[in-house]
Length: 167
Image (cartoon, rainbow, N blue to C red; front, side):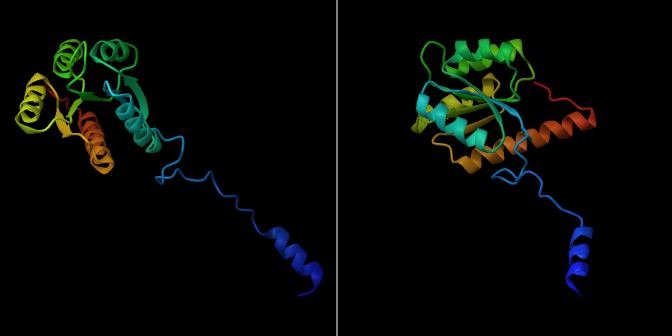
């Protein structure tokens, strides 16, 4: 093959341009998984959960107490609310009750870092108030992410089958 033939054969090859690089987790950057509201009075916890969730493609809203959470939920209805139980002004259990009364279909995951019997009692109370699941802090990122994936998969299955979650 002489030089001109080689040059023509190079021109005939289709140019394959790589698509946008995938997100760190393998999904495209534009793919948003779900909307999650994090309600916790500790700024460090909110920031940590924000980083984990944003990295995995979730839209995130933050609230520092129950009153702010309810006001923010009215403006920005989340798919899942991660609710700390021990907060000043309005605690998590009261906020869960109030959110469930106003929005019966809200999906709430209660979380608490206190140990012992008080912790277990608070999480039981949170479930009775309407929290769908409970998690113990500190939360392992993989536990949080698998929990959210499971909740979103269940929601998708329910909505595609025409069923709805009862309170």
